[in-house]
Length: 341
Image (cartoon, rainbow, N blue to C red; front, side, top):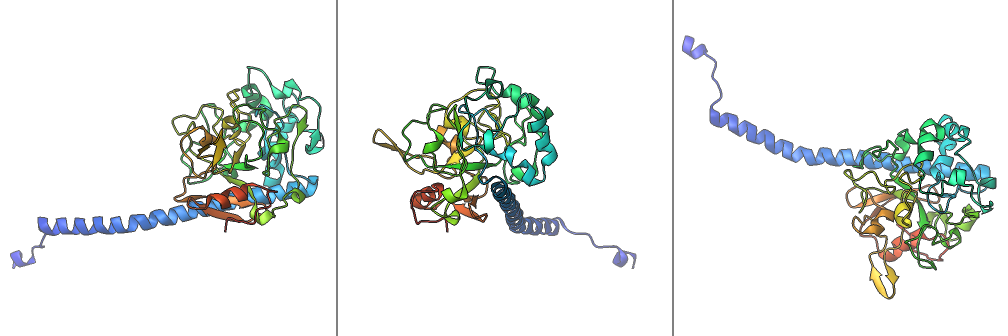
């Protein structure tokens, strides 16, 4: 009876079978869990873009124009995201910038015309670079990580190696079909030639801005803001360059290599470019290699990236989008009828 009452143990074969069944179930469930997590992250990313869209329209309602992409021709000044802070419930942080009157400046009337030669005390138009401004302005406000500027799926660290906080959302500066200058110089392309929404000044005397009425292709057909992530010269192991996307901008390494460095403020949407009759990949979606990738939109979401359109709606754009439709969405006044849908 004592032997009958003794508890029967699992055999080794039975134990191995149970372990195998558990492993199979985990293998089946893990992809589903990952998909749910990515769906949630993508939704959070889309909501961030919507907040930026609401802030942009609120700024426009107050000022009659959108903020300048940057006001300095060397991509070393504070960018459009700083001017949106009061409309993102970050007025105290914005006040930290404006209180530093030695380094913070706004173009007259918010930009949109002649503002006189940029003051070098703000411009820091010398070899000392913008790192001095980034360190002092607003008592280090540029180092504050803001969730509204960070996509949960992104793999870049929240700050670069100098502590400046990143941003995964860049303004659309347009396409380059009508540009008369090359991409390699900071001041090569003036704001008057850019056909996007947030423009780099690239002009010592003028600051260029866009008004809603300027978007003649229709707000629902024109990209305002898109995602950015890893590129040729930006990766988790290479975060010290001026191309690392910082939400306050300022190009913290003081260098200037044209649109490669300008990519920390705005990006381009030209899928195929031509130089002397030779085509190149241009600034296509999720371009990872080549210097042009530093100024191309992209994300770590599988298969595409989120974009905010001018009307405040968001779209997840697939890598498979036609080059013509993608390029058309980058222009505010090109007369194209194609859309991202």
